Image 1 (tube, rainbow over the protein chains, first blue to last red):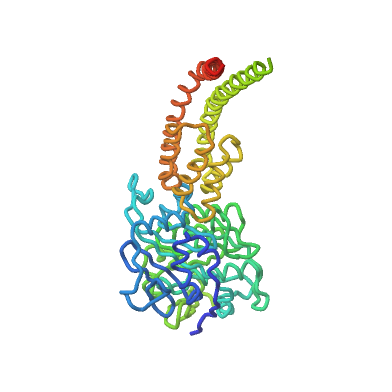
Image 2 (cartoon, each protein chain N blue to C red):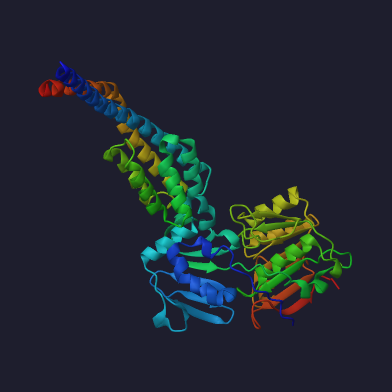
Length: 322
Length: 173
């Protein structure tokens, strides 16, 4: 059980994306606990909450507080101002991402949205009223995959197909991102050859894409298709980019599993993640079961937040691999 | 003799001054037509950048301002305010307000533009297009009326200036 290496990362670009009023309010928070902020939850007529690895705090007019009665409660005007700022007054340019429930920010940060949704033909077309935000701070932690590499590298210098499992917020995406970078650069000290990596980044969280440009360093050999359904992105990557390994985050729908199977059939290795507390739970899921039955994965990494996000609970060899 | 010459010179100056005033007013009306034409053209380009180009609003406004010198101040001004962190609504309202002081447009011409303040950038592309087209249609109606009356009113302004000057000169003489 190794604790993944954790390095502080500055919140580049996040404060810059906010309006002057919100900068004044959140500036002291970032000054005092900026390095440990994971999320900032902002809802109309509710206290603003900052989530850190150590717990939750309320945002007050002078920074943070543990007392809810000192918390700032945003009104409709503040919410509109924040929406205006995070969309750069360009809602029309963010329609696709907003219909997926988030807004990308420069620096790879993400703002999750809540409110009243507008549907068309049974699908989410966007938001009619936005009343809640979850600002998720992008932490591009380098080196977090190093303790695992020994177990994930094949004798021929390629990577075993690996599934990363954890509950939400335990570091799956961060680990996958660092694995992509490491594969892309190669790690001769671990016998890992440089790989051409195809990244199907449906939610834009691996590359942290902002207007098509990856905000996170994924190395020189990573090709990213972002904000595209996995089934299309994986097929496009395999067909056109000739990857050695394809990577995708959060397999949840059966059609995602099918797309992964088709990619693997083309002879590429696979790195992906799934929400879940245990291997047994995840293996029962309709999207994952066919992959387990087909013995697609040779390694399963189980993460938790027991000792902080990124705690490696187990690395399991499977699919007949040593 | 000398007094008469001064009087004549004064009368000529009065007539010339009055004619100049009429001419300035005629030019202002001609400029209004040019500004209305440029505004319509600018809104068409803005629609294109917003709906098809999916540019961020500040970029879209800047590009439009650079393409249309007649309406450069409000578009570039709003783009600059947006980049300073101002809301789109406030940036546009302030930019139009500042421009209106030196523009030839009349209050009624500015209404469709000002009404875009609560709209620009705040909804999906289809809605943006709908509002921009509505504003354009309002301006086109006003442009058609202004253009139709322009030759007559421009001539009238100059003639009224000259005649008014003559009448004033005669009265003073």
